[in-house]
Amino acid sequence: MVGSLMDTSLSRLLSRISIAHRTASEKALSTAGLHAGQANLLFCLWEKDGKSQAELTRELCVAPPTVNVLVSKLEKQGLVISRECPDDGRLKRIHLTEVGKRKRIEAESVVIRLEDRTLHGLSDIERNTAFLILEKIYANLVESENDSET
Image 1 (cartoon, one colour):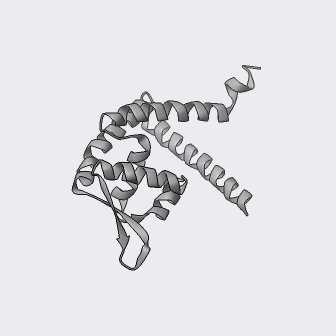
Image 2: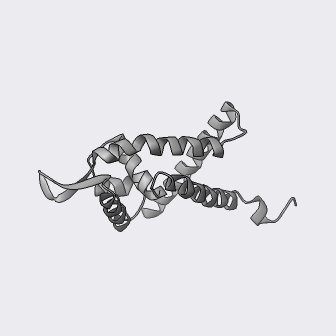
Image 3: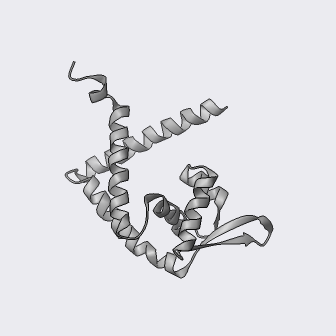
């Protein structure tokens, strides 16, 4: 055997990659004054502004209280504002401020540099292959999670 299960397990490798990427993300994004979770929420809003907290919860795959904390911290930084939906007062929509819209360039630059560092030494074909494989792994995990809920 080449190594122990801990050395050759794909799950272990994915876990190590996840931890290393999260650490690198936090460090890189701190230069933009953001944490990884905050940046992820902002990327959702840069894609489509005015999403509800429920939509953000689903897209980010986190619990509602996590989104509440993220929104609260981003509001304090002046990057987003939450507004009651005119059609449904119970529903709050999260909108980017002008400062939040401008933060996109800085955050995207950080993410591009991090991605370049992450994929350093891989050819374009290897990058595309890695992306496709990771997408399939993610889909398998999400599908199995959904199957276990039904």
